[in-house]
Every structure is written in C-alpha cells, then in structure tokens.
Length: 209
Image (cartoon, rainbow, N blue to C red):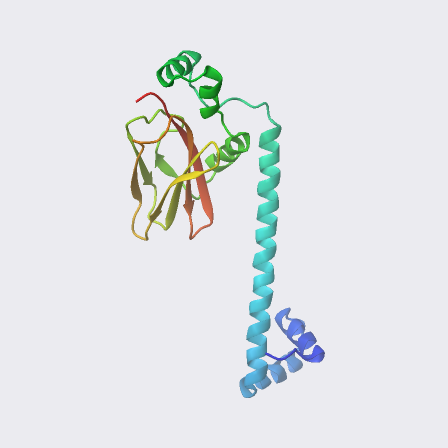
C-alpha cells in the first residue's frame, strides 16, 4: 500500500474518533462506498490502530507482571522444598555423593518460586492436579485441567533445562507424564493455555526410587 496522504490520514483519524461534523461525515461515508482505495485505506488504518492498542496492553501487562514478580522476590524467601536433612543424607549415602552435592539437586530457583506464587492467583486457568511439592518418585504426573483448551505442558529441572514437553490438542484436558527415569531433584511444571496467554506453575520432587 502506498503512503497515506496526510490530509486523508487526518480525515481518517477524525472519522474514527467521531469528530467529523454530521454533513462532512455523510460525504465521507459516500466516498467510502464509491472509492475502493479509500475504503481499503480505512481498513488498513483501523487494523493498524487496533494492533497499536493491543501492543500497548501487552506492554502494560508485561510491566505489571514484572512489578508483581519483583514484589514477590522482595519478600523473605522461604524454601519451597520440604525435603529433610535425613532424606538428603540417605540420598547422599545411596548415590555416594556428598550431602552438599545432593542438596544442589534440590536447590529451588528463587524467581520460579515468586512466579509460582503469582500464577496461583490466576482466575483464568486452574489445574486440579498435580499436588504442589509432592514427591512423585516412581509415579505419574496426571494433569487434569478445569476446562478444555489448547495447553502446552513443560517440565524443567533446577538448571532451567526442559526435560519433557507435551502439547494437549483442542478438546483435551488431561495428560499423563511418567516420572520414572528422572534424576533425583526438584522439578518445575508449567501449564500454558495458548489461546488465553495464561500460565500455571508448580513443582515436585524425585527422591530415592
């Protein structure tokens, strides 16, 4: 499309903003019906304005999420794993590793903790299972969503590496992921509802099999 004439651009802006006098508006709408190029220019301009508005909302949403995350991180950090020193020592003995090395496998990611707290407040996306923080050694994670949707489920270790990914197609709301074969440590699951740009997040443990 050619560059929009400045006079036409001003006219389009006034028309969309409902600032044209009645007689001028009627004349312009007649031109819209008669001149295909002006009508296409209006469609293009309205689509462009809509994209600007959507992008502005996206930036605002990102900024609010950033502020929310920073506020959560400023709180006194509490470990999110319930694993005890006794269990860590048993794992260390079992794997012939030092307890310091084993502790590293269960070291939480602080910003993920804050993000998890933020997603728990979501009123758009809800998951019935799995239970947060549960030891799922030799078990299966069964994700059961409250509503049918287009979901992407990922599992990450505490090195932020994705170890599993599963896509639920439209019409599905349950998924099973087998934990057997996972190394011991803390893992994070994320469920993203692609159609609504929403996310839930949680964590689980894998210990001695």
